[in-house]
Picture 1 (cartoon, rainbow, N blue to C red):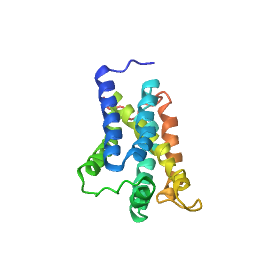
Picture 2: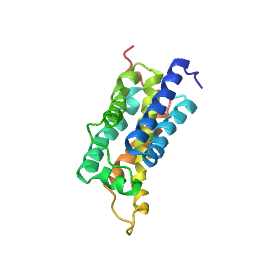
Picture 3: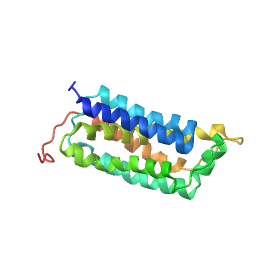
Picture 4: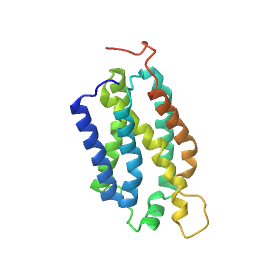
Length: 189
């Protein structure tokens, strides 16, 4: 396994702590606990892996997952995910213009840098890819667990339908991250 740079490890740990803390501040303990699976899970996968796949190997899973994530966020917004989560947790839904909500979205924008970092074979890119795919492939499965905490028969929970495609796309990305690089087409060093 390739040794990871100390600076990148420190950044990755701080990034993970920041994302989970912002989740707690904005949405409460339950949301922070759910975020832990994606961010801490991604950190652990990254630390345990020796990812060096090329951009070409993860390009399709990345853009597929990203597009499905956008559709997922639209479904959550249109179907009132945050008010539904609020009913379960008792924590009021944050205003979309609040500082913690804006910072949570800012954290997620780091995922847009993944292709640019991986094309240069930067460890930070692989860390972000692991958090992205773990968040989409593991964390988002919470949409199927949350209905159990409602005082009604199991049924639709906002965001549930889009996870049907989102999670498998992310699993595909996680699988591709475990593969060794076998393509030189996208290397632009």
